[in-house]
Length: 218
Ligand code: AMP
Image (cartoon, rainbow, N blue to C red; front, side):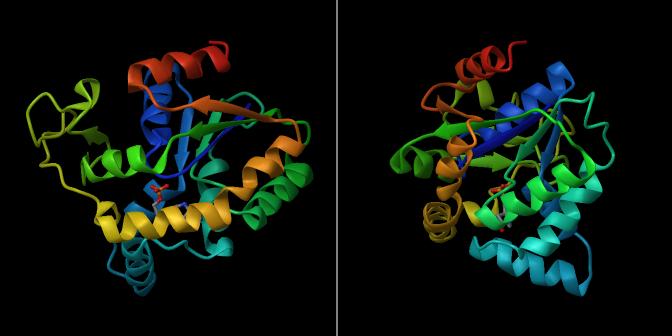
């Protein structure tokens, strides 16, 4: 089964994916995480991607699909529960994905969960988000259930937490504009295909997790 987690940045897609991966053996594929790993390298491509991420813009569709494919093909799409977190982000990417599924993986079940949240809350969430630069785990300064055990240090590997470059206010605003212009039309696109469920994401991570478990019928 393929679950597509759709929604603006900061709506909790990554956190819920992380929990489903950790607790229920779902396979979390985040194109954002893949790009954050890639930019740690010292290559020309890494430098280019770093610049785009920092500005909060989108990476080109072909490259994004290429990195997604490298990850997705590690799994058994018939048996595994796969979460696509942050892909697709525009209609063209959705069409590339559906064309690939219809060509190589016919009859896959696909469900889109649309995380809904108002911009004011998104901005508050993103400006208070912290991330482990080593393992990628996200934390939050406001949510009790997402605070690290030791302030500013990752629970997994004790690395000092940082703020993501693109969680600075200028990049956040840019990412929200891009979401409105490019990603939001996917709501209607998936709705027309009758595979979309809306989720009110204005709740604590624990509550949202429970709601998603119900949707996924676990
Ligand atoms: P995220 O962690 O999902 O917020 O993604 C962080 C950044 O990675 C985005 O702002 C984009 O620059 C890039 N990125 C992630 N997913 C995609 C995608 N599907 N298409 C293009 N760029 C992406």
